[in-house]
Image (cartoon, rainbow, N blue to C red):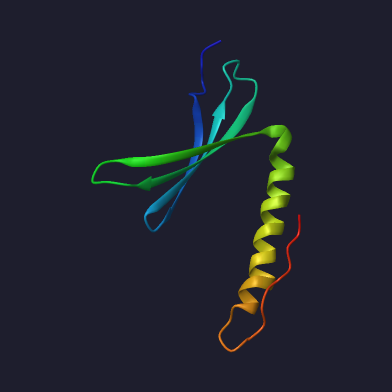
Length: 96
C-alpha cells in the first residue's frame, strides 16, 4: 500500500506577536492512527527560534479540549471581568 499520508497531514498556524503556534495533525508510522502536536515557536534572535512542543494523543483529545475550554471560560468570565478598569475587586479564587 502506497503512503498516501505524509507524516504531517494538516497544519494550522496562529501568529501571536513574537510567538507562533502550530497545530499539526500527524500519522503514526503504521498510518492507522493520528495525533496532534502543538508547537510554540518564539524568535530569540535574528534567525534563531526557541520551540516547545506538546504531543496530544487521541485518547486525550476530549479531556484536553474540555480543560482548555474551561480554563479559557474561567479567565474570560471571571478574571478579565474583575480586571476591568473601575472594578476594585481582588481575585483570590484558586481551583485545583
